[in-house]
Length: 562
Image 1 (cartoon, rainbow, N blue to C red):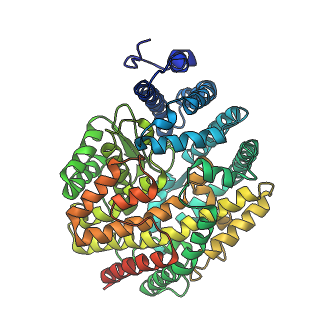
Image 2 (cartoon, one colour):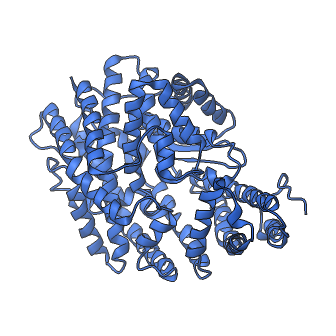
Image 3 (cartoon, rainbow, N blue to C red):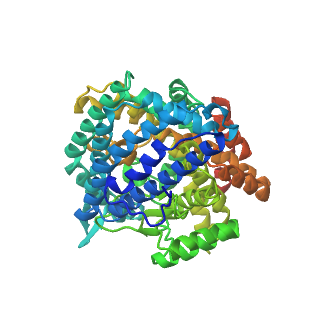
C-alpha cells in the first residue's frame, strides 16, 4: 500500500489498522528496507501522537465540555489498547529482524528503548493502562471546577492565589483559608482517586514481575543513567545542602516583614512593602512582551513564539473549567508545539511562559530529527531546556519591568524559587516513593506520612499550628502525583543543570546558547550524559556538585538583596 498519511483522519481503530497491517506483513530483504520500515512506523506514531495530543489539549482547555472528554476517552479506551497490542507485535518483529543488530549507532537509543518496551510489555496491562489514563484525567475535572467567592467575585484558584501577594495581611489570611477550605471539600474525592490509581498501577507493576510500581516506573521512564538509590540519596542531599539555605531565605523574609510569627499566608507577599508585581494588563500584551523577551535572547526564539501565536497554539489565560497548571505539548506532525497555562498577571506567569517557552524552543530545535521517537525527549533533558530558559531570559526581563526596583524584585522571586523548588521536589518524590512501596496503606497513614515528609523539607520558621487540616492534604494540588507519577525528580536534576548553564551564560552568552542549541537539536538521539555534555555541563547530582551550584546561586541572590 501507499504509506501516505496526508488525508488520514482517526475516528476509529479501523482508520489506522491498514497501516499497522502493512508494517506487519511487509517483507524486508536488506538493511535499507528496514530503515524505511522504521521511518514509516515512526511517521505513523507521530501522526497518532498528534491526534491524541489535540484531544488532550482541547479537553484540558475546557474540562466541562462532555463532548471533548468523550472524544479523548474514546481514543484511550477504544483505540489505544489496539495500538498497544499491535505495537508489541511490531516491536518483536523489529527486534527479531535479521538486520536489526546491523543498524548503525544512530539507532542506539531506539534499540535500547525497544528492548526495554519488550521486557515491560504484558498483554494483561493494556486494559489496565487505558483505565489508569482515563481515571487520572478526573484530577483535572475536579481541580478545574474549584472556585472561591471573594469580594463579590467568583475566582479560579489561580486568580484567588494572587491575593496571597497583597500587603494587607488580613486579606491574605482570609484568602488562604478560603482556598484551602475549598480544597478540603474535595479532599475525600481526591484521596479516593489516588487510592484507585495506586491499586491499578500496583497491579500493572506486579503483572510485569516488579515488586512495586516505583521500581517499574523507574525502568519504564528509561532511567538508565541513575538508580532508585541515587534518587533516594539525592533527596537526602537536598535536605542537607539546600534546606539550610531555605532557612536563611525564610529568616530574611521574617525579619524584613517584622513579624514575630511567620504564617503560611506570609510567604508570597513582597518583603519590600510594595504591592504585587503586575506582569501585564491583558493576554495580548503578555504575548507581545514574551515574544520580545525571547527575541532579545536570540531573535529566532521570539519568532518561534510568534509563529505559535499566529497559528493559535497558545492558550494562556486562567478561566473557570480550565484544567490547572501549565504545559508545553510538542506536536510531531505540525512541528509547532502548544503552550497551555493559567495566567493571571502575576510574577509566576512570567516564570511559566519562560519555562514553557524553553520547552517550545526545544521542540522547534529538534523538529528536523528523522525519527519522531527522538523528538520524545526524557524529562531530564526536556526540563533542562525549560529551566535554563527561565534563568537565561531573566537577563532580559526589563521588557516586562521598566522600573529597576521591580526588575530586582522579579529576579529575587525567581532565584528564591530556584532554591526552594528543590525541597518541594524532594518532598513530592519521597512521598511517591512511600505511596508505591506501601500500596496497602489507608488514608490516615497517607496523611501522616505526607505530614512527616513535608515537615522534613519545610522551614521550621513557619508556624502552621492552626492549619494542620490543610497541611495534610497539600499534596493534592500536585498534578503529577495523579497524572504522571514519578515525573518530578527530573525537575531537581534539571534545575542543577540549568544553574550550571546560567553560570556559563553569564561568562559567555553566545557560546552557551550555541551549546544549548546543540544539545536540544539532538532530541533523544544520545544518552543523558552525552546530551548534558553537548550543553556544556555535567550530568551530575552528587553532593559536592550541588554544594558548588548552590553556592553560586546563593551569591547571585545575595547581590540582589543588597
